[in-house]
Image (cartoon, rainbow, N blue to C red; front, top):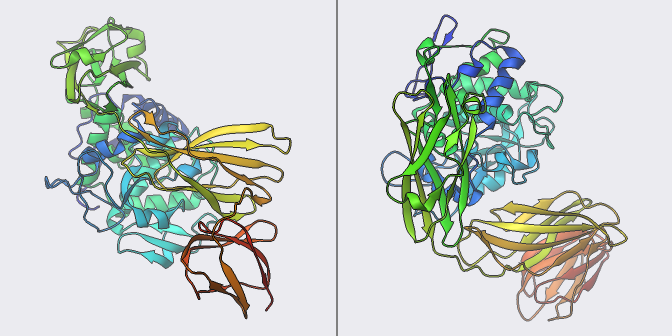
Length: 552
């Protein structure tokens, strides 16, 4: 978004106007160049407070809300106006990994809940976007006025048939988000390499570099990005340096590659004087929500420079008895290191409501003390219903989509418990996956294997009872049962449905058990188009498989 003008004076890089970067925060990257520069930025970013996925809607109200005091969601994926209502999910929206979680595997690792790339997103746009790479669309099949998805321009897409193109006002936002992710998590092994490389320290491949630099240049840092970066710093204890220092990307991937990156001297600390870089007096540590009877722990990295002795830490004021620290002092050597000292803070509430206290850090040769506000919220224990798991759909080769019915109450997310068996019925693996949606795609069903899955809902540290078990093998779905009948009359190009009542979730399988057609509902006298062949059909009302023979 084009609101701020970025300036460069000689070789000194100035911070973005409006940013309140702690003195000395970027000292470890000062004077470095090329790969050494990127590695130094990675080390600076990687150690941060990791939040919980269930608290994201709570945090979004600080990071992604219009500054008009109406509680309106700032959605970079649509023009639909929606509003926050407490810490609950916003209807019609998802917690979107703008940098797709499937690209690294999507398990519960630091990147999974990193707010620097998580945004509230219109659900329809999110579904259309899928895990496609960024790009410029030549022929869109989805366009809501802000988000476009479709065929990429020549030379883009990295082999993917579709790309996601945000509106011009947000292209720089997404570019700087991707620069952050490609640096903070450069040590990941990428499963999808549409925009990424597992063999280059640059992490991004060349067409991606060209696109992201183009977007970051055409859409400079906005007031929105600056405010969001500040809010995330209060939550995660790290910052997006490509927002604070917009020209940093040029030193790693662009026109200034090979030059030494030098921070404006006004942002550096006095040499030799003890300072505390983070947390500082403006830091607000928001721990999120927890249910009564549970506790939550976060880690804040305490970083200093030129500290002369160990630091002392304590909690004070208001509800400090509900918060605990494991130590009362922090070693000087660890606090002075590039990583800092990982200080754990635990919140164990004894009553419902919002609670707060203050973290005080002193000694170490510092002048006076430093304080950071800590807040958290305790909610009632949730009541969670048992989820009803459904048969998978879209079975094709190694792919299938696990499905289940939506939970009737508000939840944080779903947990899929999947077990993989070999042809001797021995367990190959057991894994858990999480999602906002009522489905989850898998692409690793191998010949001779059998997969089972159950589903649970999760809210505030509590999980529902596991659902019924669904079984699928490489030869198709197993375990169909007898129920209400449905009949089919062969006709040219398909079959005519004859039934006294609607049938829902109609599945049509090929003779070898692969799903070839799914219809959400069929009624009497509906016509189903099918090519010549032999098929097996079932529905929620007719679990007994029906054989269909189509002769065209």
